Image (tube, rainbow, N blue to C red; front, top):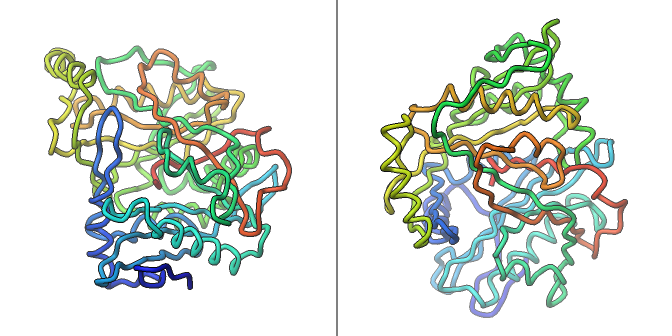
Length: 375
């Protein structure tokens, strides 16, 4: 595997690397209007196990044998252009602050390319996202120093919906209902997923068995966390799960910008009046819920709106600050977010191949599906 001067060769991570990778993740906070440190305790690999059928994590050690960087690669069966396709997903590129600007990131990117090449050849589509404002990653779009070119083809917006005052219920247009899911609903959910997902780029291919197995494997997620929208005649119109990920991913606020600090003070003053949960001070845990497996036809954003408002009212006062939901900026479902006062965070959706630029059909014709809960 690739080696670089001053670093040890990139190697496959093993279970014994867990503590070192947990420490590395906590040294790589997300900086922005609100600074966030995401811890993966107690098991760094819990997230990677959910990201694909087969996965590997690469680690680069410094001269003293301490992990200074990592990257994850997963093989996935997804829908591309309306058909199942084998693809790769690259994530978790982390470099210790003391080693940024050096050879570590290039070594990890080369490792990721080698893994993708071995798994699917030089033309297998490889998906990744770049957080808006991450200039070091944006500088890799052109494939510097012989590394793969990254083609940006969409923007994924994470909508953070603060749980404030109670909102007026949004009924389904035919007078249907919102209800919790149960094990008996899995077959019907998988059937709707197959119809909806094939119209989206990079949505995971699921049948009833694989969907049930994925839910079972996800820490803290249960079928009862899914909400179903049913038409008056009983047909399933859409579903979504709201997932508390604290069992394997904890988020701590490290800082607020001056503007957000002022907003926080006003928000926290009003929170007791409207029954909302106060925003935490720096150093405290931020509790929120992630929407996962959003399954609503693009032609019915009103169904997603009904699901979200129902969940919003149900979860107010339960100790959570917000619900976060990821949608392609050009997704027709984005209309469901109107008036919910969601705070946006954008990421670039990119595609590459191990052998060079992505040369397949244009990906922009269908919205991309990206589970931001798995970031």
